[in-house]
Image (cartoon, rainbow over all chains, first blue to last red; front, side, top):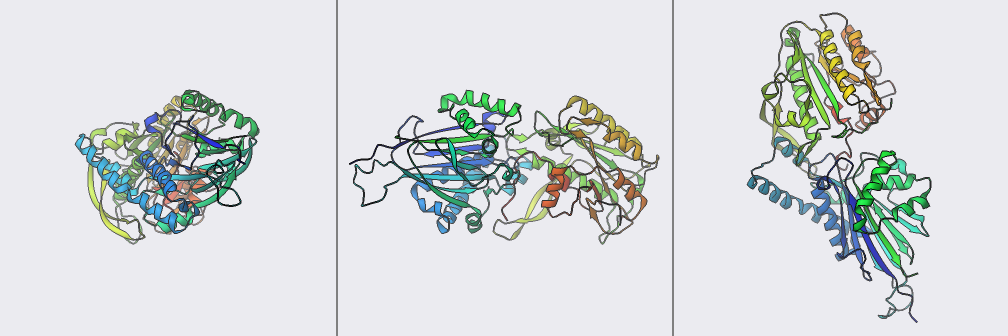
Length: 287
Length: 278
């Protein structure tokens, strides 16, 4: 006997703060496997969400590199999401990718006739900074004997996540909040979250300061990954079910314009801090 | 008056530096290492402008979260910028960053990313040189600043209010400066009154003090006057000062005696701070 087919759909939207261009947006998202929002996913998937720090230069580039590296390595090595040496190894490899990238960037600027200015030299010596949230989701083989191919059409999924800083994961069931990670209350957001520095070679410290969580999703559940401003709005919403309904209005990349208009409305009403926003929505279907 | 307005390019704030350039600034400052007061304040201004520029630096240039004036007072009152910005009052920060009078190189020990320090050469841009001549027309300087503040608050009535930072040895020669200081802070935006902070460089000695909450222990009447003129630190600045290890209370003021004032620009909130894990 087979269980009902469960599959996953993933969509993500990234929008700059009001007054900034898309090129200036310092939030970044990477989802693997790379596929359209209406593709049915049956196998493992991973996502990296990063929020580049306003006060660092090249934060958007570091956020992109870090989110991509996190998603790639979470696909290759799910153990990193349990912390310890595997996470430290990932942290080392992410930092190791920065200097070659920066050297190529610096050369390109010189070739372009725009060598780095004095303040860029000073700023880049300090490194670039970003928060990091990484998630991997796997079909749950469930209890009992080793699954046969048919039984792999699972009715449940497992997720594992690692976070450094205040980009958040929310698990919803029947549109009610089941789990919030790593921040549970809006009061906990500030302007000095833990950050992943592009020049931080102390991988053990990065692993020690990261937080880890796991959970199980059933058909009908949703996961939302959000950077801090939207996460703070969500956690403070007086009518959280209403907030969920508002978020569900945006289900694909074609909705980006409407999403930005909606964000600007929240900003005007001072319900949302004027910051870049990234959101990843993962829907578990099959019910 | 919450001092919570966003500081952004569309909603910038202004910082107006007042620099005492009177003859008495050629005297040495108290302390173990003898330094001319004029050198100390010029160094402080150049480091403050460096800190601000680097704080707002992005790969496509410095963002104009702040517009800046550097006003000298001594033989005259007016712009103290040297080089391409000479004669200008309030200048967007991107122009300030791109137009120092010159850029020196200095050696500095910086973290190597693995817990140690390494000697490196850093750029040290200079926008003004030390000057020491004439009297100390602090009243006129504060009135000049009040005029700039009035223009700014009219232009950005909802923004974070202007910040005036006065660097002096405290001996005003054109009268008691308290009323002129009140003229500065009498201008306000919807977010709060203009802020006036003071750096007192003095040969009187005593303990260097940063952001005190009382005039007790300050060595002379000039220091006590400047303390009384200084605005209380807004709440978010107090919180940040506390997180940096400063002892603060509800009545902590933006006053520094023979101590480093460059940290004050780090109190200004433009978004997520780039700080290394500890």
